[in-house]
Image 1 (cartoon, rainbow, N blue to C red):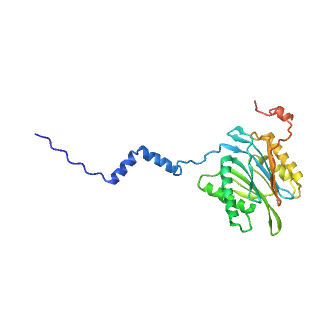
Image 2: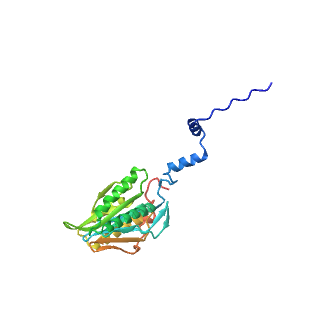
Image 3: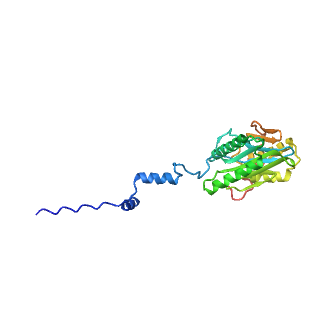
Length: 272
């Protein structure tokens, strides 16, 4: 006897196909899910900074604001780049200095270029001052922090602009999570621990530019001795009502003959 013919298979519904795809996802669907998780175009978040700059020091003085940092950039713990400039002009009235991830700092500079260009296109006789730009940066940094994609930088923003009370000096900072404040003297990175005590003890509001340079150089020298990421190639910038000036890099005279440098473990307990 001939065997009975098999019954025709029932057509599968779209819900059955979806359930099967969940159980055994295809390679294409896995790739699409990975791309969507990374932002839709395969991009990823900055989980750790790679090329970083260290401390930025800034303070007000009699005629304006002075800012300084070295020109080194580290790849991890390696001093990879020796001529990286981390102080830039922003518009007509401001200077910005950045420590932290250098590529994120470049992205911030692109934001500021777009901001100042848009402000210039209004052609209304006014321009953004340091206070407005600092407020803008605080919103940018806090916004990126809330997206869990922060810009890994600590930024110092200083400038001078004429206001209703005459020439108004401004100096503020903002970090990678949006914490911000205004102060007479500021240091980021390791300088927040080593330079701020010096500035608190010796800073005066009526300092001349020459006195301000000497105090800044004293702080930079301490950081050079104590911070392994620092190099002896520094850049100083100033901004007044007459405009901004970023001076070429130069080196400081050092003395490595101190007894504590020659035998740092002498008298210490428990060291090798």
